Image (cartoon, rainbow, N blue to C red):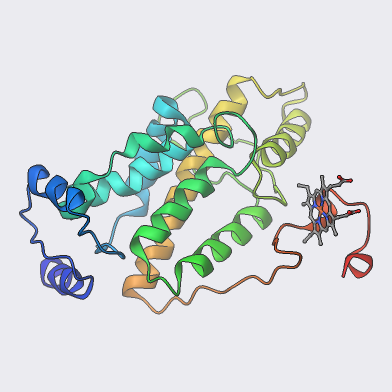
Length: 244
Ligand code: HEC
């Protein structure tokens, strides 16, 4: 039974709460600085979380879409320490942090979720696993059941980078070929792409967490050089051999 597993997790996590905790007491835990990580995790439905992330994107952009979908579901199903987390704090991550085009907001939110819910020794490898999947997979794959493009074929793109700017522009390039007209950064199509991407990443995060906590998933570390794991050739016109 889920509740029994949850209580076990709560004890393991050293959080002295039960499922019936109120908002007030969750906040008082926060103010006493007693919330210890990782927070307890219960199995979530990837499809449900994806739908929520898709809607969330159109409210407060990508990072909020992902963070609110996953943490919002945990607030509903676990309550306790999650109730003190204002999910709107991730609005800042939209467009690679307030439109700076740096780290994709979906990945920014996912990193925080892993940091909150996985063991200290594992959360960075969870990030590695997700980012590697993100930059090598044709995305987005989520298909919404409402909206203008519902159930219609929709272009995908491989980003080769966790950066918002690169990921968006590479998709726009593909989409322009696909639609047979220029698809620009400020187009409705690009917004829809990022909404679907938020849903796709949110579902992937939950699949990974379900597998990590209740299956036998082992995240794998990605080796980096010069303190970075980005593909050097994205910006440097040299071979890997020359760089190392
Ligand atoms: C997002 C773009 C980007 C990526 C990806 C990137 N770099 Fe750079 N790198 C830069 C920029 C910009 C500079 C500064 C260049 C300058 O000021 O002339 C730089 C500088 C460097 C320098 C110093 C070069 C010099 O001439 O002083 C080294 C070494 C370097 N990068 C190695 C790497 C390696 C190794 C990787 C892959 C692991 C990497 N970079 C990935 C953008 C990038």
